[in-house]
Image 1 (cartoon, rainbow, N blue to C red):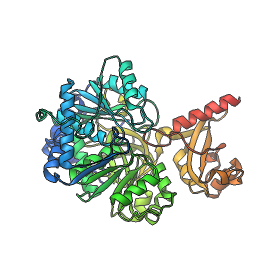
Image 2: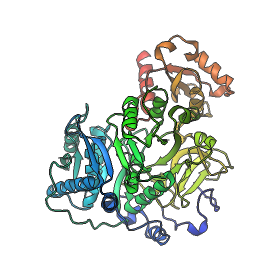
Image 3: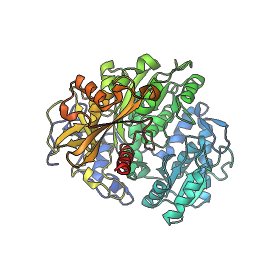
Image 4: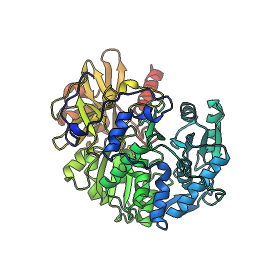
Length: 570
């Protein structure tokens, strides 16, 4: 990257609001100076963007305002089949119980604690108990295994891991103990009690934490490798939450269905768990992500809002139901690009407004606005939620692309990090504090962004660059296709060949159909005007894709399986 434009893109601030430069730094274990340079911190404080509020105060402040209002409805892992209904006062007391447990086990303010819980009431006790103490939660997802947990414990220098004995088919405590033993630093494995199981003895003193210090650790959302650790300060994260509440128009009447893992950044802050509790709304946890369970809870709990990744959203769209979904006002879809054709079905099929969310745990969050024209809601991924966000669309040489052209997304702002914990992937950050997201986007005159794929998700076929997402969007318009992935596979003549992997809506009916052959797919794409060099070299039909921990289709796992199958046949 060599230069940046001096003018501000649409929906970003002018030069008077531009913070001092501060480069991407190696963050060993994140002091305030590691997270953001002092001049940058002062810049956002002076403008009132960052406040002195901390995550330690978040729940107690909400409990003071909304004491008797419903806060959480969730399964209890410790008692299979049982559910908890907690008011804000109840949830505040529960956080105190867990904070007392941590103190009794030697955990102190500033210590790191891995939170490894499913979408049950214990997650809320664990997260809010850790921050109540002034310790730092390190989020792990329910689908993580020993390898990831060991990495989190070691990389974060965690003092303990909070979990449940089991939930569903997963033996959480056994996984945690194995990971703790492998980590070698002897972190404690602590089981989260059910609400009221061990009332707090001596109240935990109010945590004296620096609002600019490390507030929590999130995970990078990539689809390959062990997740990178992302350090977020109290000030930057809570700004993101407050602004999300405003953009998404939350209120005490909001009732949000938590379907995705509670620990995921999308579920946590966009506006998610912290946003709903800031507004005084209610969180209802689905014990599983199936449409049947979700639709039942929407009807019974009068859910007004839900957040999904595209594969789950498509499953909802393709599942007929007699349930009353009339209370559902907003369906957020994010985590990956939502196909235009599917997005256009949401209002008619589910009877609610679609809100596209394009964000990242590293910071920048884009939303379509609830009052945007329908065309922008269904064909774009929104625009930055804050006027202080700076967005640049640059070519591979670091120069601005022409308006409307595809380029690499770079961003900085009051809630976008300046480096990963441990200083890994330092090349993702430049000397001016901009972060390269790895996304390929177009920016419309309105400022809305259209995600065209990932820079590393292009296929280089005989020197020609092919966008995987361009072909995927077209394949989803083909009759009988429920989902599609386009991958580059090694080829000794082409460098990479293009492989289309299709999931039929009805696998039995698709068997033997000409449309699902290589010739049929190529013919369909040619009718859509696709250039000859972009046409697939191979078509594979599957019943499902391997997924990442948050339900995204995993390109890496799909590619690896196809290569293994090819090697076995050779």
